[in-house]
Image 1 (cartoon, helix red, strand yellow):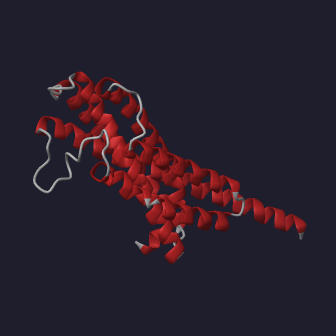
Image 2 (image 1 turned 90 degrees about the vertical axis):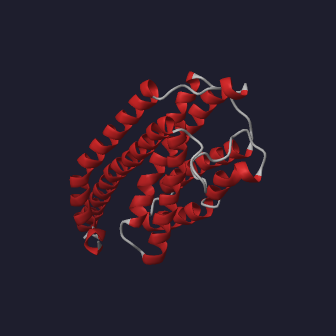
Image 3 (image 1 turned 45 degrees about the horizontal axis):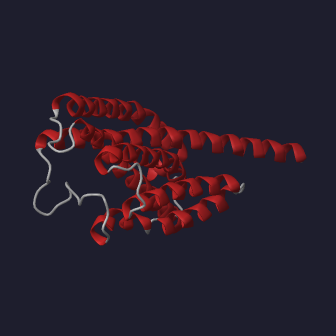
Length: 242
């Protein structure tokens, strides 16, 4: 894998993998959406509105997963000075921000008929809003610092500090009294959800994960090209000065 640390080699690999990631993403999301909308039964208590779960829950998973990937990439850049680690972190941020926004919007839509309110500042919702602002702050900081090396290291520190919010999101239901129910899948005994609902939920989760991989590859390729263009322009300016 070390040879793929070279941006040119990685660019070629990403170009080859992108169509496969796209096909896997669209296939899994299509299958999960079909099963969730037309095959899975409605919930006994919530009825048809429960079907928004097949978008809301995977989006919430990915909101946390993308930030964890961003923080891990930032750590790799700071510790090992990996040439593509900061690129991966920067590319992950907008994707995670979109997933977080989807989770918040679908959660509000689900919450109105279920809880009788569009919004409640409970621990889970508040910590997810903080996650959204962490994404936005990370991207704003990248754009605010012109020097790429300093921007990469400064944003990496912000990403690592913000990672403290991830266990708060995960365990907020257990630590505080919130409107959200406890975990239904990650349990020591067995998932507290029927297989007819679990299957489309997992398919959507896998589909969203492959969508992240697809978008990550595209954005990393774009970032590599942007850095090449920047290097060529700087070289041209220096040549003109001499």
